[in-house]
Image (cartoon, rainbow, N blue to C red):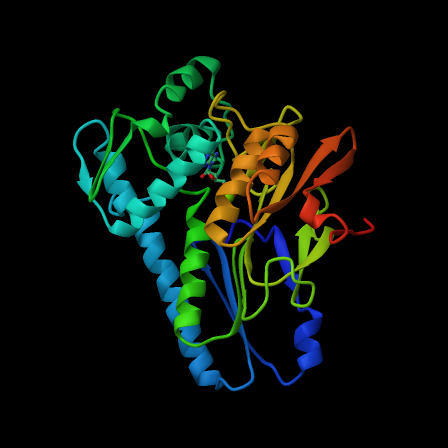
Length: 340
Ligand code: AMP
Ligand code: MG
């Protein structure tokens, strides 16, 4: 696995842990799901050996989910569904059925702005390749016909894509899901405080705290236009946090930035905003919503955040050479803008 993309959110250790002192920090990093995976456990009692064994099992869990859900091979469950699109249905795990159902709920909520059948269009853009070709409008019109979450037929345990050429791409939700599973595993092993970061999808597990708890971790939001700089920060406790940005997978051609978050209604990258951070009770929700709100744009996106309980968000957009931002009500007074 290559390490293409770096964090959209970075963590600095917050005040609670410092005050408490004595907390041992066991941290490891690897690559998974085409990005980096870091797991940090904070504990007074855990031995280094036990901590490392637990982290090994988190790495194994994320790998297992990647094997199920990647669309880069024909052998994963998603790959099998894709190659049999328009031909036959495929028996898959309850876990994949669950995630597809969750994804479809987000699609319904957003009128299709979030749609995991966006695969043929993401492929056509080939953001990971070196040839940066812009698909023609004609080709895009044909590809757009293949994108429709209503053509995913789920009849547990069978899944079927109605049209040939359809492709599932869980890139907008699977990392958040993998983070949630990792946090579950850490809890089952008795860990009381940990942070999992899978390519900027964070799971903060800090027993006895809540999402916007000011005493736990400082979340630094990457500056969308200045490499290595931060746009601002806020504090969070137990929650899922995800950022979607137009700087994560992109190319620039003719002065225009083409990036990986696609508006399914046009087939072209969503244009209204440059970065969206969502904080939710779980990382799956944060991951799907950050992608979805990015596509909806600042007005409809912020409306959706405000009307979804347990969810807060930060939306950043460009105006000329400067960046502007909007906060949901729960982040007002908590988000601190950096000097950049
Ligand atoms: P994220 O970084 O979580 O915002 O996810 C972006 C990834 O989600 C892309 O690289 C695609 O794999 C996939 N994707 C792009 N556009 C959409 C969309 N409109 N709905 C669902 N997934 C998408
Ligand atoms: Mg996402």
